[in-house]
Length: 316
Ligand SMILES: C[S@@+](CC[C@H](N)C(=O)[O-])C[C@H]1O[C@@H](n2cnc3c(N)ncnc32)[C@H](O)[C@@H]1O
Ligand code: SF4
Ligand code: SF4
Image (cartoon, rainbow, N blue to C red; front, side, top):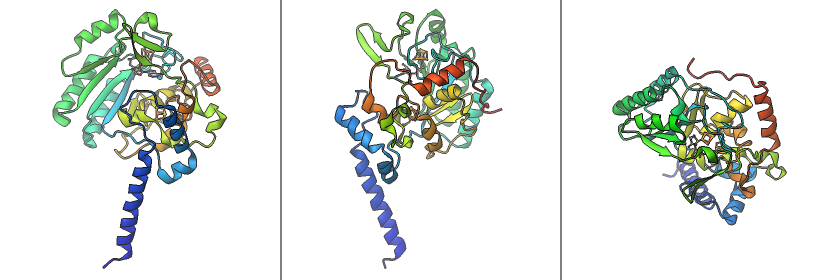
């Protein structure tokens, strides 16, 4: 017999299906590195407005099986627009061995089964304990997450970094962006004649533009869809860019315990995506350059005058 519980169940399923189908119209494939077309930008801009977001939910989810760990904010380069602010707000903050151990304990406890643990920064090869950290991660992988990869993202620039890279044991994937010291300060990276990567205007805050007034920032962008959550010395974040922003703005929003796999950490997106040049809705404006919009200009001024309070630590 059909009762009200069955009807509610089918109605909910139908609603989920409609949402999924409608979302297909908007989500551009996060594995596609090509810049979005004008049509995709316009559609996404409409999609991230508050009324549609209320009906359809956040446009972008997150990969629950990937974590990006910013081991250090120290870097030997000063790229314009760095999405960790290594040039704009230089710092030597770094993760301790104790914090890495806590992360591994939490991973065991939650049976996290990481498919990819990504080590980055800053320049991770400048962390004096990098090789010890890698040993701990390899040990963890043996016991907990056999098939998962450990990826080290490096700029590959300079003798010191290259010497460390030579000592990285087998079993770690080295993703070398091949930056050159003489190119730091630019925002497009060339390996030979080929343009490898294009730096977006990370410091152009969507919230600094009037036409984003009705945007809902819970929508995020493709970065957590591909690269999961972020972890830095101050805790867990909705993505690694948000983690790096917090040290500059000083909101102190890092979570001190690992979020559950289905937690999109929307309270953080509401704050950090407003400031982030990667934000999907901002694509209407997408430009190549090194704009530093007012919210960021003020934040860097405060940071570089030492006016931003130190954040509370993870695992203390
Ligand atoms: C923050 S870096 C850290 C690892 C290492 N220092 C490097 O540059 O490869 C991680 C990745 O983010 C990219 N990245 C940094 N700022 C960016 C921006 N404004 N737009 C696009 N990619 C950016 C870097 O090129 C690199 O591939
Ligand atoms: S090398 Fe990487 S971390 Fe360093 S300034 Fe450039 S993008 Fe940022
Ligand atoms: S903070 Fe930036 S990188 Fe992170 S989800 Fe928001 S828009 Fe994307």
